[in-house]
Image 1 (cartoon, rainbow, N blue to C red):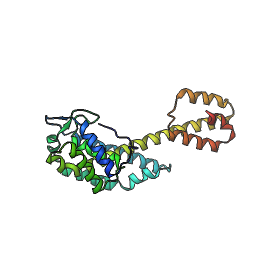
Image 2: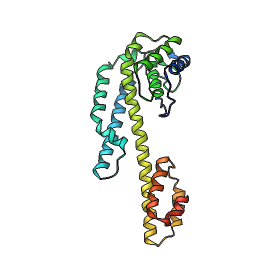
Image 3: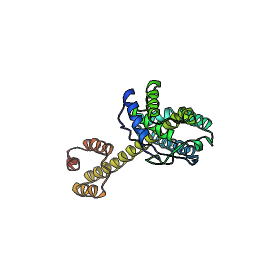
Image 4: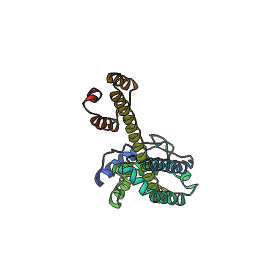
Length: 240
């Protein structure tokens, strides 16, 4: 399963058409029938989003801070579930098996039109409209015509692609949350040492360096912010 970076370059209609022609030139298709992997992926996306929401609700219930993005997922859980149910209703079990599949690239084995839609979503930052979508599809077909079934399937593929995008967002939010939790634990460890005045704080810094925590933006921001509340005694850790 391909993973499109959240920061894919946003393109205008003319650029989308040009990019779609290049994409068509790279695509190689298989002629044999496919599987129902899209339905399985839909179920996996649903489970991961639900798991993220349960974890967020638990954190909220323990009076811990919840980011606006995580709160958005909780507030819109019922809307996301409606889209999942609609996707299942409009994706017949045998339909995706009849679609042309890719033989190459990160989406090898998946329907060509699904990869096409994922690429489009990534380059419009999930803010799609008829004009840009039409330019993208027209650009692709200028190089390689799509089958009637693929054109018919574009609306449902858009829904599946957006649900895939939401799952990727929850994964990034979970990574951020875990980084902040690690930062909190090290801050608490350092603060307890400073308050007890039994162990030299440099010991904690050595432990921290040896533990090799994830130096993500979330970890650094959370660790620095929380150390600032500890006071000047935490300067050594901040320097690290």
